[in-house]
Length: 136
Image (cartoon, rainbow, N blue to C red; front, side, top):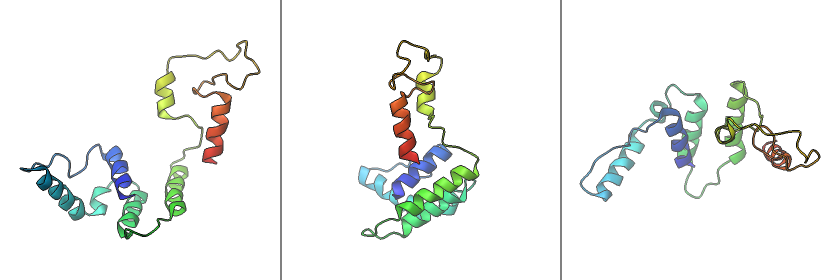
């Protein structure tokens, strides 16, 4: 869970404070990385980004190894942020836009009634329905 938080912050920041640390051996390098992670205040790591990232990482760091995370709470943190930022669930993702950009799909094809026809977002009708059900 904590590692996922670091990945999210990597996506936000473009780098993490412990990247590029040098050491004589791999073991020493991993020890330095661990020390840097633990000594970097979460507030500093998340500075300039929505408070939900700080909340998420603080929550994860507070968990003991055998604690079960409250996944609903964590999902809700980011859902609330998503809505507060004015986003909507349109089921169009960056990877679909990149994959299908510049391509136009014929929506008046011979398969007029087919649910496997591709929509403009790169999903077939069936795939789009599945995605919508998954996120609602």
